[in-house]
Image: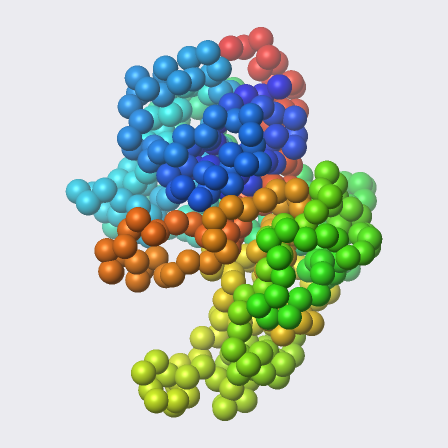
Length: 403
């Protein structure tokens, strides 16, 4: 059984996937209070440290994990211009000026057999101010620690997640690997590549296949905890319900009557820019005047019989339910991320804009709400596929006796 440390744990999607593959999560580090509460509730046996990883010294890291050294280090350290950088950093696009450096400290101190990093696909094309590819810096820094390093962009739908979500994974291994990343197990309906090397792939569930059994809700309705109203309608829903007796986090956002009317006017694929002029958003402080700016990425009604678009951290304002005139609930987002129904999200469903809180100096109120936790997560089924493949690689390369 592989022992795993999640250094940027969030709510625990990455860790959940590894535990689903039979691994033991021996520690999680997360600086957000609400995300820690979620992780602790759903991983009660795992020590969770509500800390900024920069505050953990090498000596403290070694002491904490002295008796249970992890064999896998997980994390998604911010590595680009939008990342949390030190004020003294020179080039904010250089990963050596970001939390990536602290992530490497954990690898250097603990010397795990594998290091697995996750990030947005664009990092593969990102360059520093000196035009050096960011991905090459990351790989070189890991090689300097003695690892063989590989990277690949994986698609969530290839592993049964009902969401178009590409993510870049960097895998560092103590030993060279012939086959570092898992092959697809699923394909989209009607895809020409529905079979791989003669093996038939399972059809990836659609958005509606993922959420159609959830209770129907009007805007502002729902409960934090409620009973199921019907039976599961397909294998994906049965998989999501396994181990759950109640439904959590299925609460619809409040919408004004005008916004509900706006949603009623939208067909699948439409966004705010497609609604009648009198239903478009009003200009701020404009005395009822319609805004001339169309936010095309906000409030788009999803197609039911396709995978969902990528679930971002702010998905409460991005997507409209395909049939009901409201945005998605946290539970619907969790289903689309492949979190099982027994997984409960803590903290408030939404919070005031982090930019506003920072501007007003209310940093003590700055937490990751349920929507943020869900949207930031690595889809558990995607993580599970990576974990199962690592376990297989470990056995095939005789890692068991190598350490």
